[in-house]
Each structure stands twice: as structure tokens, then as C-alpha cells.
Length: 111
Length: 114
Image (cartoon, rainbow over all chains, first blue to last red):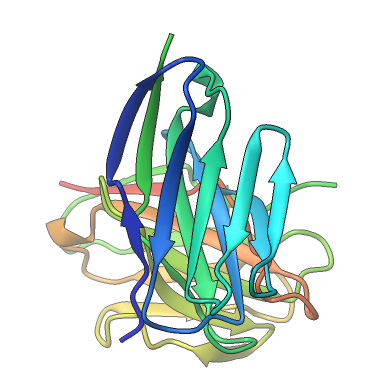
């Protein structure tokens, strides 16, 4: 069974601080996605990474795919209250396979 | 360019009734996925469909649950004889043919079984 473990489960920090959340697995993924979900809404795709070691930036968010394509991290610089939400990582082991989701990191940014 | 649409957004059923959840994929998308999410949990894969074909239903309970994606019209997730444990948010996602790892989600249907 392929599992994606996300840590921490919950994170509450002050506005302006930096943070990193992690997504780890013992499986190798052909691609990995990060989503953000707000209460009462569906997940919104933030990024897809496909190459080991790949780094992608989206404004204050930096996503990294591990060299072995088994793990990923999301770093947020100068967090803002608008970053509050559930961050989900999801991975595809083989092309066109079903996507597996982690349980998410629930992030709360205090103003 | 409309996104993935799901209806109803909220559905209340009594135990034993049937629930029908609808999903219209994004224009041009040929793949539909259904997921279930319990409070404080991630998304659990249920079924993956292309037009008129079920590709992978490994996450769907063998009894009471069925899904279809007809040639015309939305994808339907059908739950017969609902029980309280079926209460959850059900999300549909769609992806284009050549990029199945990029899924776009609908707003979900929140099913409450009384």
C-alpha cells in the first residue's frame, strides 16, 4: 500500500513567519501535486512536480520534489492569513494510475 | 470556461433512501474521478471513469455504490440504501486525456444521512 504521510498535521503560526510542511513516502512517484483546500470547498491545484530535485516557486510558496521522487516539501515565506487552509499532497505512482492523497497539513496563520 | 460542477451542493437523505450525486467535468476533459472526504481527513479515491468506461473502481465499496459516466450528460455517483456512515463530502475531479495527473476539483456534495 502506497502511503503519503504529511507533517505536521496541524500548524499555527504568526503572520510574517516562515514555515515548511512535508510530504513523505516509501514509494517512488512519477508526479506529485500540492493542493490547498478551504472549508466547504474543493481542493485547488497549486503545483505539479515531476522531476527529481525539481523546485517550483509560486509567489511566496516554494515546492521541492526530492531527488528520489519519494518526498516533497512546501515552504511558505512571510505567511499571511490568506494562506490559512488545508494543504494536501497527492502522488501518482504510475502514469494514468489513480492519485493517492495524504491526510493534509492544516495551517492557520494568526494575524 | 466553467470549472467542474457538482450538484447538489448539499444532500440530506434518511437511512435506506438513495443518493444521486452529479458531476459535470470541465469542457474538454474526458476523465472523471470521485473521492470521499471525512471531516479532518484527506481524500479517499473511490472510482476513475472515462466516457462509458470504468477504469478503476478499487476504492469503491462493492455493495450499494455505483458510478457511471455516460456518453452524454454528467457522471453520476449513486449510493443505494444509504446508512449514517455514508455521510461525508464527495468530490469529483476531472482531467484532460493527456495529463491525468492534473486534476481539477468541483466544490463537492455534502451528504448527510439522518
